[in-house]
Length: 363
Image 1 (cartoon, rainbow, N blue to C red):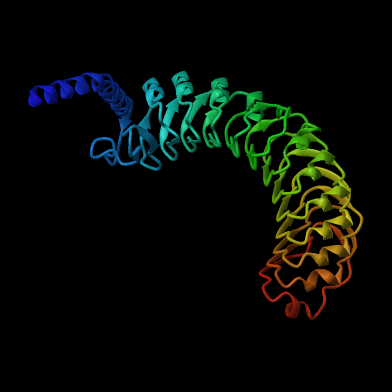
Image 2 (image 1 turned 90 degrees about the horizontal axis):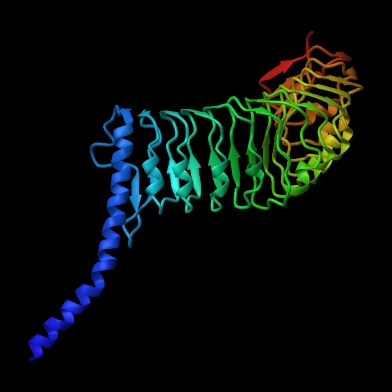
C-alpha cells in the first residue's frame, strides 16, 4: 500500500512537471537551432570556431539559455540569420571585427533583453533600422566601420538607457537629430567620419548633462558651436575637426572644467582664441590648426600645466609668443607655424619644457 502511494505521488509529480520540462527543452533547442542557423549563414570560418566547441557562447547557470554571443575577431564571412531573434535571453551580442554583410534582420527586434550590441568593423549595409528603438534595455549601440547609408534615426536620442552611441565611419548623411528629452545615462556620442550636414542642433546639449565624449569630426557640419554645449559640465573630449564650422569659439568654453582633449582644427572659426581657455586646467591636447583665428595667443594658456600638445598652426595669429607657454613642462609638441608671430624663442626653453619632442614655428 505504501509503495502504491509512493508510485502514484511520483507519477503525479512527473505529470505536473512534464510541461515545464518540455518547455525548457523546447527553448534550449530553439537556441541551438539559432546557433546552427548562424553557422549555416557563415560562408567562411577560418578558425573553425563554429564547428569545434562554439567559442564565445555563454549560457545562464540556471536556465541554460544563451545569454552572450561574442564572436569578435574570428574573421567570419556571411550574413546574419533571422533565427538570431529567437535567442530571447541574449543580453550581449558582439560580432566585431568580422566580415558580416547585408542588412540587420528585423527579427533581432525580439531580443528585448539586449544590453550591449557591438557589430563594428564589418560590411553591414542599408538603413539603421527603426526597430532598434524598441530595445529599451540597450546601454551600448556600436555599429561603427560599416556601410550604413541612412540618416541618423531620431529614436537614437529617445532611448533612456543608452550610455554609448557609436556610429562612426559609415555613410550616414542628413542632419543630427534633436534631443527631445533628458538623457541622463548618455556619456559618449561617436558620429565622426560620415557625411552629416547642417548645423549642430542648438538645444542638443540642454538634455545631456553627463556627456563625456562628443566626436563629430570628419563630417560636413556647418554653423556655430551652440553655447548650450557649455552646459555639459562632465565633457572630457570634444572633437569637431574637419568640418565647415564657423564663428567664434564661445567664451563659455572655459566652463568645461573637465575637458582634456579639444580638437577644432580644419574649420572656419574666426576671432580671437578666448582667454577663458586658460580655465581648462585638465586640458592635455588643444588643436585649432587651419582656421581663421586672429589676435594674439592668450597668455592664459600658460595655466594649462597638463598640456602635452598645442597646435595653433595655419591661422592669422599675430604678436609675440607668450613666455608662459614655455613654462608648461608637460608639453611634447608645439605647432605655431603659418601665423604672423613675432619675437624670439626664449634661450632657456629647454630647461622648462624638458619633454618637448616637436617644435614647429617656421612658415
